[in-house]
Length: 368
Ligand SMILES: [Zn+2]
Ligand SMILES: [Zn+2]
Image 1 (cartoon, rainbow, N blue to C red):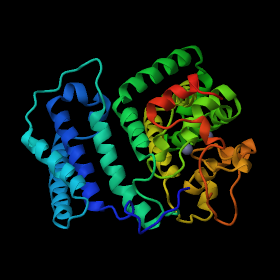
Image 2 (cartoon, rainbow, N blue to C red; image 1 turned 180 degrees about the vertical axis):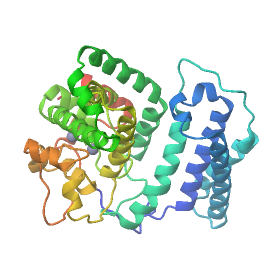
Image 3 (cartoon, protein in one colour; image 1 turned 30 degrees about the vertical axis):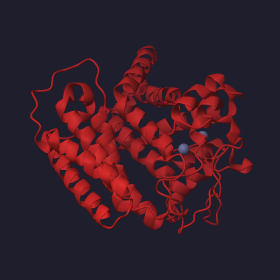
Image 4 (cartoon, rainbow, N blue to C red; image 1 turned 90 degrees about the vertical axis):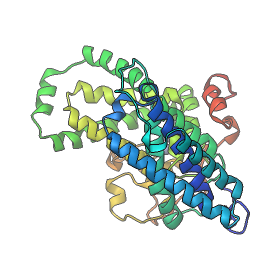
């Protein structure tokens, strides 16, 4: 890992200026969502929030971008970056801000999930950046090396969410229509929803971990998965770096058993929310010791060891929810002294190029 020097100009970057730039740009994208909701907002995610919530959030974002940006400019700290924040927020206000009027949203066959990107990035940054700065295990920059690559992954995977869902639904429903098991389905459906949820998490993790082990041991699959392991820094954003074919393959492989076994929709929905939260948390730069809980749930230290640039850990900790899955597979490995890896990434970093486009192409053209 690169050495962190608190006196370097990079470490002295103004958090207010950069926060203003982030929030200002998100507000600008948010206004575009208000203007073109049919095209830019995701039909599925729109159900999760109200128009009033979106307008209030926009108002808060605009005020925050102006206040933080102005303060940074007055203090002469990263004034150019702060100007990006104030400028974007001004443009967002000129384009109508939180008061844009829009007609009832028409159903379009395809739409982008720009609202999903804006809202989830805003809240993830709001929660994780302060926590990682206060409780981070590794002293590192918030905008560490290759953050642009990971934010690009975050952007594309959120904005294209509907297309990913379409691909996953197509593959799962085709297989589920062939492989239904009526007696098992009946037994699963007779359970209360909370028990179905726990069973769904266990089944999904078992399938995920099995496939994950294949990704590590089948050379052709490793080409895809190496992209995820190429991150040299662990933080809440690092987990976004996944090859798009891997996203579709893994989500399908995990959802197929859930659909075939007949879990009720609320149990599957709760599982989908958990996987989103736990995937971000598992990569986060968090040094908190969780004691015995680390053996019950996959927490940062557990998954960090999976990402360790250490030959002894190349075949360990495949689970993303429950360490018991690795215990059953014989791949559980966690140092008892509470230590974290000192270096992350693939053993041969030269095999994975930098940047989203090059990484998407790498499995097909790179030298392996
Ligand atoms: Zn892996
Ligand atoms: Zn990971």
